[in-house]
Image 1 (cartoon, rainbow, N blue to C red):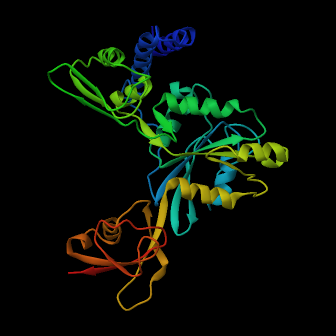
Image 2: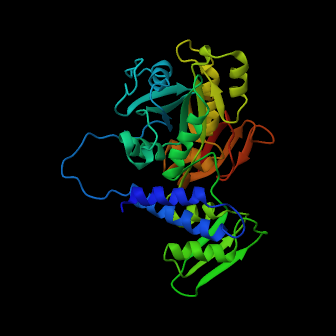
Image 3: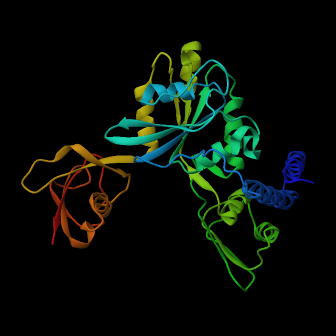
Length: 364
C-alpha cells in the first residue's frame, strides 16, 4: 500500500470516528500517523538525473508575498495591475505555468510579489505542480489567497486545507509549548494551566508514535493534540494570510459588504481597478513593515530614502541596516517620533522604533 492510500485510509477512519472522551486517544494516534505520512510525502524520494526547469525565484526586496489561488481567479491580472511586470492572462484556465515575480513599490519598500500557477484540489499530494507551488509559498513572508467572489465559499476552505496539509499554518501563532528530546529519563510531563484538550496519556501515545520515549514537555497554554504534533514534527511554518476576493463588479452590493466584513479580507476588482489602494494598505499592515528615516548631524532628515524594517525593530536593527560595523562603534542615538516621550530623546541600542521615526546615530 502506497503512502497516498494510507493517508486516504486514515482520513476516512478519522471522519468515521465519533469525537468523544472515549475516542480522543485513538484520534490523537491517527492524527500523529497522518502527520508522519504527510511529512514522508513532502520529502523527495529519488534524486532525478535530468535537471528540470527551476521553479523557485531568488528572494529580493524587503518582503516576499506569494499569490495562491485556483486557476482563472485573476492572479496574473493583479500582478499586471500593481507591478510593472507582465504576466500572461487570458479567460482560460492554467494561463500561468511557472512562477512569475513582480515588484510592488509602496511607501519606499520593494515588495516582491510572486504569481504562482493555479493549484487544484489534491495539490498537496503532488497534483498539477501543486507541491512546487506550495513549497514556494513556505518561503514567503505573506500568503495572499486569491478568490473568485462569484464562486462559492468552499474554495476558501479547500485552499486552506491544501496549505494545512503541507504544514503551513495561516494567521496562527506557534503553540506556547516547550518540547525537548532527551537521552534518558522517560517522558517528563508538566502544565502551567488546566488542560481540557490533552492529557498525559495522549501525549505519551503521540510521542510513542514518533518513536520518542525520553522527552521533556511543558504546556504553557491549553493546546490540542494537533498543536502537540506541530511542535514534535518541527517543520511547520506560521504565516500571515490575506484573503482577496476579486471580480466584485459581478456581484451585488450586499454580497460585497458581507465579504468585506470577514477578518483578514479585502474585496477588489482588478479589471476595473477598484479598491486596490486599500489592498496595498492591508498588505503593508500584514507584513508588519515600518519606515524609519535617518539624519546626519547638523542636516535635515533624509525623507527621500527611508529604511524599511519589521515592526518591533530596535535601534540596533537600524544600525545593522545602514552598515554592520556601526553597532560596534555606537555611542547613543537621538530619536524624533512617536516612540519617544519627548523629541529628540537620547536612547540606546535596545530602544524600539516606530513607523516614520527619525534616527540620528552618534558614534564613539
